[in-house]
Amino acid sequence: MSHVDEGQLHAYLDGALDALPAVEAAEVRVHLEVCHDCGERLDQARLMRDRAAEILGATAPVASAMPPWEELRRRAAVSGAPAQSPRIRHFHWAASVVLALGIGWVLRGQTVDLPADAFSGESSMEAVAPQVPEVVLDEAPVAVVGDAAEQAGPRSVAERFDSGDGPTGAAGPGAVVATGTVAAESELGGSATSLRREVDVGIGPTGSATTVAASPTVLPTVSDRVVDVAVTRPPAPTAAPIFLSAGARAPQADRPSRTGQDLAPPLPLVSGEGRAGRGQFSRPMRASDEGERRQIDSTMGSLVVPGLTVISVSWFEIAGADEAAVRVLQMAESGDTVEVVHLPFGVGPEALPDSDDGRARLEAEGPEGWRVLRSHIDPARLRVLLERLQGS
Amino acid sequence: MFADEARVNHDWAEVYRSTYPDLVRFLTRKVWDVERAKDLAQEAFVRALRNDPRRPRAWLFQVAANLARDEARTVVRRKRHLTLLKGETERLRDSRPDPSDMVQDAEVWAMVRAALDRLSERDREVLLLWDAGQSYPEIARQTGLSVGAVGTTLARARTRLAEAYESEEGGSDDVARG
View 1: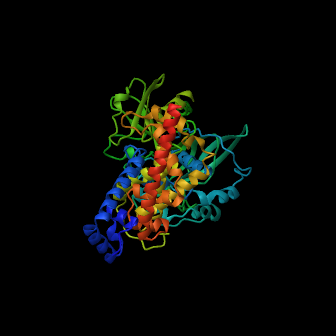
View 2 (view 1 turned 135 degrees about the horizontal axis):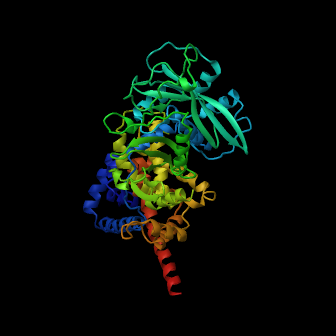
View 3 (view 1 turned 180 degrees about the vertical axis):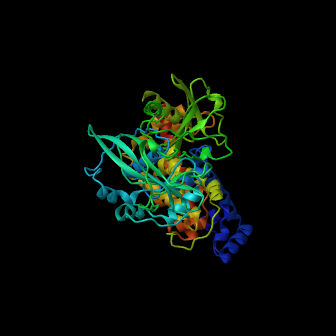
C-alpha cells in the first residue's frame, strides 16, 4: 500500500484503527511495521497529539464531587416540561404551599408579574394548567413520582377543575381520602386579594403514597393557611411521603365536610424525613393558632433565601431539644437544591450531623438560633446565598 | 436524532458516573465557566432522564453541545455566567478551595481559548469531543463526518491548535517583555 495518511496515523495512535474497515486497519498495521518513514511520521504525530492534549489539559476542570444521582432524578421528575419558565417555577413554589395542609405554616413568596386575569377563576387555571409540573415534596421516592407523571398528564388538572366529575368510587390509586380548601391572602399591586384553593389528599399510583392535588393557582406575595379540611379517612401515620400530583382526578361530591373548630385531627405532614425509623417527625399545627402561625411566619422569613424557589418545608425533632428544627429545601437557579435548617434556640450546629454526600455546609448563628446551609453548589456560591439570607 | 430509536434499559446511575465528568470537561471548553459547565451537564442528564434515549452517552453530548450553543447565543444577557477572563480569575481565586488543585491561571485559559477560537468550528468540535473521551464512531455520529474522516480532522485540529497556542504564547511573551 502507499504510505499511511495522517488520519490513519492518528487513528492508530488513538486506538481507533478498528473503527475503520478491517482491511484498511490491517494494511495500516502491516505498513507501520515495515515502513521506516511512516514510523518517523508516527513519532511526530504522537508528539503533536500529546502536545494538543497537554494544551487542552491546561483547561480541564478539576474533578469535584458530583451531585447525587438521586438529586438529578428528582429534578427530572419535578421539571416535567422541557424548559422551566418563570411561571412553572412559581408553580413549584405555589404547590409547596399545599404543605400547609394540616400544619398551617405561612409561606412568603416573591412578587411576580401576573396576567390581569390571574385571579379570575377557571379561565386562568385553564390557561396555565398545561404547564403544571409534577412536584415532589421533600424527599419522595422518585419512582413513585415517575409513575405518577406517566399516569397523570398535566391536562387532567384542567379537566378536573372544569368538569367537576363525580366520585370515582375507586379505593385504590387515585382515590381521594381527604379534601379541603386553603385560604390565601395575597397582595397584588398593593391591594389585598383573597382566594381559596382546593386541595385533595389521596392514594398514589403505587397504592402506598399519599398524594395531594392543588388547584393551579399562581400566587404572588401570599399568606396561606388551612381554613377548611374535610377528612373521610386520615392517612396512615407512617404513610409514604406526600407528593403533589397535579393530574390526580378527585371526586368532588358525596364527601362530608367539616370546617373551623370542627376540624378533624390535623393531617400530618409526611416528609421524606418523617418516615418511620428515622427518628424524626412532622409537626402538625392548627390554622386557628394565630400566634404560632405568626411565629412560624417569622422563622420562615429568615430561612428563605431571596430569589430561590421553595420546594418544601418540614419540621423534625432534635434530640434533647424542646422545639423542633425547621428545614426549608429550596432550589437555586442552577437547579441545585439548597437546604436551610433552623435549629432551635440553644441548640448548636453540631446537633445536625454532617451529610456524607459531599455537600458543602455553612453555619451561621443568629439571634433566633443557628442556621445551617447544605448544598452541592460551590462553597463560595453557598456563602453568597448565606449572605443574601442574612441580609434579607 | 436518537430519540426515535427503540428504547432499552440503561443503568443510568452508571451512565451518570462514567459520563458526567467527561461532559463537564467538554462543556467547560464551550462555555469557559466550570460552574456553568456543571449546570449544563446536569441539565443534560435531567433531559436524558425524561427522554430515555437509546444511546445515552452520544445523546448527552449532543444535547450538551446544543445547550452550549444556546448558552453562547444568550451570553450577552447572561454575563454573570460568561467567563470574562479577567473577572473569572478573581472568581476562581475566591472560590478555589485549594489553589494548587484548582484550574489554572486565567492567562493560560485565555491563550487556550484564543487558540481554540482560531480553529474551524468542525475541527474544534471534533477535538473537544475526542478530549472528552468520545470514540471515533461517536464523534462521527455527532458531527456527521465519516469515521475515516475523524482521524484526518483530528490530525489537522491538533496541529493547528499547537501552532495557534505557540503563537498565543509568543504574543504573551512579547507583551510581557514589552
